[in-house]
Length: 285
Image 1: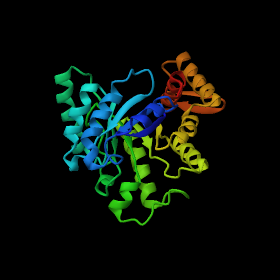
Image 2: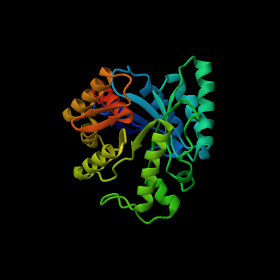
Image 3: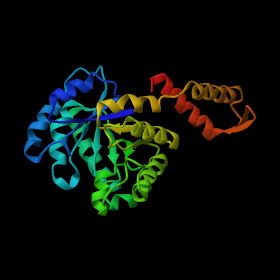
Image 4: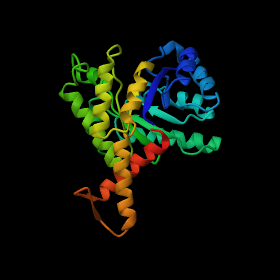
């Protein structure tokens, strides 16, 4: 999955349009895009969205943060409809992840479901910045770690985050720690949304930089950003050719720890990278 498009949980019209689009996954949002008085109705709407045939994009649900007291009710409403994943906002560390995983385990046992993926948003509070290296081995449900700048700015008291020109240092720090934390945990690092809606060059730049640095996907808040993100995260022909050379070289000498390709020394980390590239190419990513 390369692109995650946020869809308001109270808008069936936007969902129907997004479902016919190019995003690899939709995040049906019960948090920021739904006002408090509308939460209960939105849960029912999201349940209806999840009941559509699953021929299109994967369907994740962003529940409300644990400190709202709404998380468990959100899960109770959506888990019978078998979402492909749960997005946990304002995740401050392993204990928050364990709590949600515990909730999910109960629903999975009661409903006969397989373990549900969790995509945790791990940079939305100042406290969360200090725990991003602690997620390894916490729970098998953790599929990915996403960073975000808007709520972090509020938590820090920052006047702006500098998104249009390139994020200011506190937000670059959060981004890079999310990337490293996800790599250490063996899960997918997901880049934040592009808040600049009308200048496609900004989302193109952000997506290219994210792919370059090691992110595996990017979130978006507008359908017109999806194509740029998908293009940025798709393996190029040159990358596929390189990956095939690497895999062929190690297949020819399975006991080798290092092989030589085009005058360069290639070792096991390169082989793992090559496998990821080929897997993405086979999925159409």
